[in-house]
Image (cartoon, rainbow, N blue to C red; front, side, top):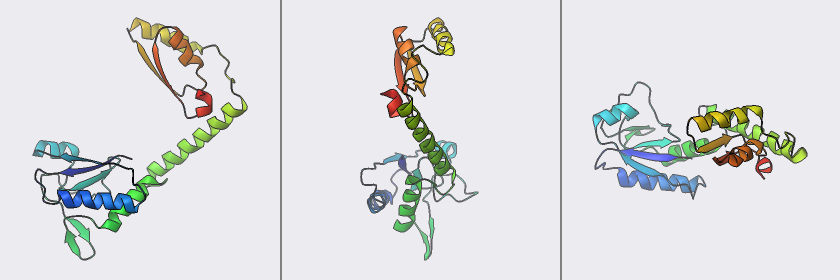
Length: 191
């Protein structure tokens, strides 16, 4: 999870925002999770990133407190609280936003669905490579052989293979002289 606090220069709420975030992380059981703070220095940057005031909390690039149609700008941000407006969200609000983002099924439902799909895919390939460790054989796939020629012609030296399985293509690329980084959902396949 990537967490950021966006601030205007000399924001009077900077210290309180960082303390609030640290407490919310601790309360949510996310003790080892770090965060960064960024200063939005000018109006052009504010408009480019959709910054609506200081401090703004971003969790995986998303503002959990975003209000529709709020204009961008270098300003202090006000958060709607049951007792009125405040310069920071409540501890419980921030903690719930963090918990929601760290569990399958965030507030938008999209990240959780993607996470569930990734977990299902990972389990499928773990089971597949456990049951059939060399199911695709040791020879490279024909498109990998073609790709090696195209890569060489383009002057490429490094290959990143996503979904390398048990590595038949990654090993072929390495034998062909490329530096290869292979990734896969299945630790069993990579092993």
